[in-house]
Length: 214
Image 1 (spheres, rainbow, N blue to C red):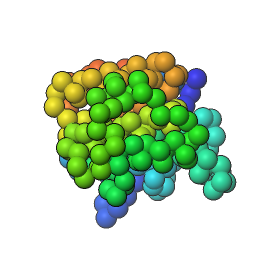
Image 2 (cartoon, one colour):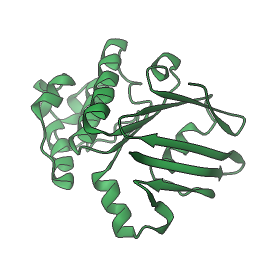
Image 3 (cartoon, rainbow, N blue to C red):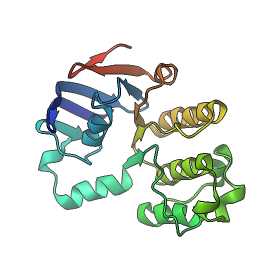
Image 4 (cartoon, one colour):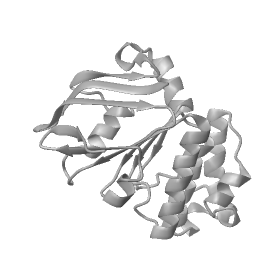
């Protein structure tokens, strides 16, 4: 099943970042986008996840053109079907780790699963304040917060940047398993070529063009 289709995307800030970008994501599939810093990888991810509007082109989520969606419909899709994970965790600092997950639980109507907390090795510190956690723990809580809502598409921008290699590998395997078991998809932006190669498809963004290399 097709989850996302982007056609002829182009975007410009003070200068043209990229143009004529086409990409498709299907259920159970993972896609990595690699490229030099400043090539526009994160901006492209923000377009695909509807955080930004492209200057040109169109994006279809679950076969619906985003540009024709009502605000209510798009808001519902963002709340229930899209999960965004960034290198900066964006947790609520005045809350405990568990309270951060409860926000996701409340908004999505999904339950917090102990198996997820155990897989991310964060069950023990769940009732500590976010500010008392290490950077790696904070990142894993932010990942748990996103996966708790059971998204159909995961958008991840350097999600393992604050993690050691062993934990990073465990987290990526968790993402891959999640996508397969839930017929979900993932689009990952990373500088790590080894990590990228674990995905089903790999694209390289360079010289304003997105080229598939795997």
